[in-house]
Image (cartoon, rainbow, N blue to C red; front, top):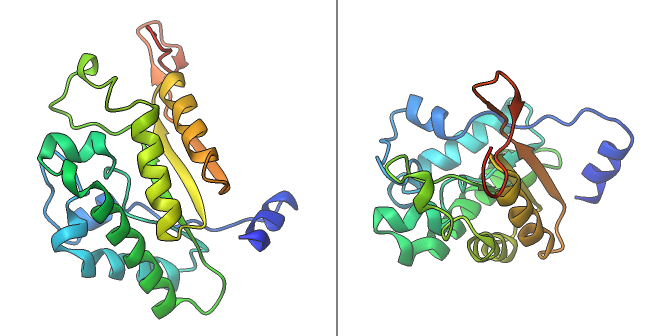
Length: 197
C-alpha cells in the first residue's frame, strides 16, 4: 500500500477496477431484491472472484471487494443481519484469492463501505442503520479480513459521509471518500445535510 500511496502523492495515474454489482448482474448473478449483491458472497463467490481476476488481467491496480451492500444496513432488512461478518469476510477472501491467482504486479484490495440501504426502506427509516456504529462494525471487519484500504462509496449525505470517514479512519488504513451529489429541485448540486437538503 505504501507504493500506491507514494504514487498517488507523486501524481501518478492508478487504475481502478470497474463496476462490481452491475457487472455481476450482467454475468447472470441474480440480484437480491433487498440486499442487492451482498448475498452473492454466499452462493456466487466463484463469480465474484472471477470478476476480480478479469479486472486484474485488464490492468486494475486496485480492486474493490464486493462489500458495497454488506453493511448491517444492507443485510439486516434481507434477514441476513447475523451474516454481516461472514459475508464481508467472504468478499475480501474472494478478492485476495483473485489477486493471488491473477496478479503479476502489486494490486491493492479496497473494502467498500457505502450508504446503501434497500430501496424498500424509506429515508426516514435508515438513520439507525446508517449510523456510526454500523460503519464501525463493517470497517473493523474489513480491516481484520485484510483489505489494504477502505473505499467509502456513494455517500449521499454529509452526515453519513462524516460518520463513515470517522469509522474508516479508526482502522488506521488509508481511506478514500466518494460522495454522490444530488440535484435539488432548484437545479443545484449538493448532498443532504443531517437534517434536510
